[in-house]
Image (cartoon, rainbow, N blue to C red; front, side, top):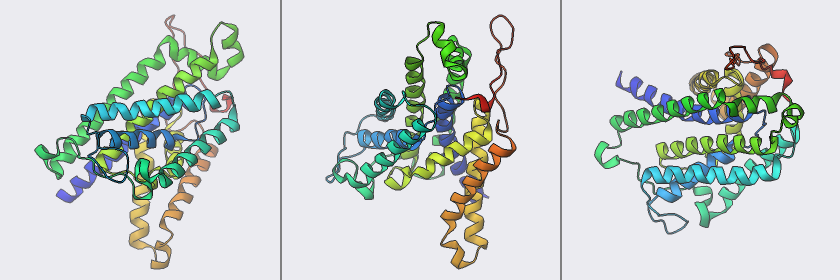
Length: 325
């Protein structure tokens, strides 16, 4: 029984961390229409920067600053935001598929850099030497994991509430206006490029927070943790849950992460030995099938974007998935 509870704590912690990243993507795509194909780059920037800033001294790579954990986590978010600003300035003039390809290229370049830059981030060996916060007081067992889960859930709620208020604000209405008809929004005196950049950086900072929490939980990060498949997992979570709906983003995260872990367990337990060698490949195929199936069966997701009531009491135009430009 204790083992089951421990696993549920582990599962919920990882799912909640990923849900924070999905909320960041929902701001970019669901509310602004920005197709970010490089989610893992901003997630990874937050993870690596957090461990570099908060880790113990290491002889073979940069780090060892041993900053107070909240400062290290904020540093990871800042690193993700700076990377997003640089990428946004260079790529947000692109549209549609071109933006997706450009940001996906950033993710591939980031993973390649982390794999080869041993002096910067340990190369293929990854980053170690990070003392988990409050480890001496709580130990490394169940109690620590439970406290960390409470911390992650608190941050998830904070991000959820923040984004909810942001979307209901005039800035949120501006995001949807630019998403639906950029020319009309520009004719009203808005600056679509500035608004898109703000949304892109804000969503990426949230992804950096998720990356920092992920690296903290494992006290380790390596290039294997920032492979492009993570981007597709996070996209699948948003598509299944419902783009434009924060509740749907969280629901989709738990469904996809549950399916991912359950399929891995089932394949390793019941599949023939020869097939178990291809467990990862089969899981990748499943993710692709889920994305394609949802787009064909229910493109709006399980929890579609809801009508937003304006201050006048009249509902604004409901967003339709097919209308994104």
